[in-house]
Image (cartoon, rainbow over all chains, first blue to last red; front, side, top):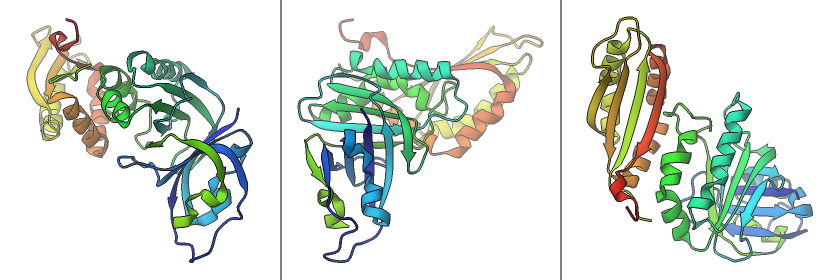
Length: 204
Length: 113
């Protein structure tokens, strides 16, 4: 299934009563303001699937927004996505010239995180087919947590994270392969039908 | 799971043949001041074998300590934003045959040990 993640921030005010797009049904998905603590994470996070993923926020809202986004397929996923909680997405870009075997090792280690970090309830690692924004994003690493403390506490403090996986992200490590410009974004995980008039245009 | 109260960072640098003294000097003069400013405390420096080889490779090992996991994240975020850090590693590559960086904690801090 086609999926899209978009981290949306406003770039210009829309005149009062004005809109930059005609309302249109967007189908099911997630549209939430991001929570404090995101890094290059936008003001709003939109995640859509299937037919809804074919409509981008940029196409709907035009120049009034800037978006870091990625279109990707199912990738490798697991766990429980059926409950609420906290959704987190990391957009990352592997450095040009990264050998395929190192990429595969990196992906294996990322996907092993839920085995050790039990606060990760649902997860998905997808390879990006089409990227938008500050970098040519190559991967989307997304997770669901029951509580914010699962992300800000368990995930960040776990030794599998800082002593094993982080070396791929660390330019001081000889194993470094991930561009240091990342998008780390999270929001409440509450899904429902979306319409473009529910996009952050109310504040744009 | 409890977070480690002390995080150990070990740089293990295998110098190119006969270049270990130069590498040590560069690490001390150009890398250590910034590392200390980012919160790293040098615990010890080891040389293997413990004499300066002329035509073979010495291994230098730098054992640093950080103030817990928060200290690690603070240190590494500062380093990632500092182009001088990456410049030093790139330039030092002329003196380095291979290298490793390991992060560790005392085994006594693991649960159920």
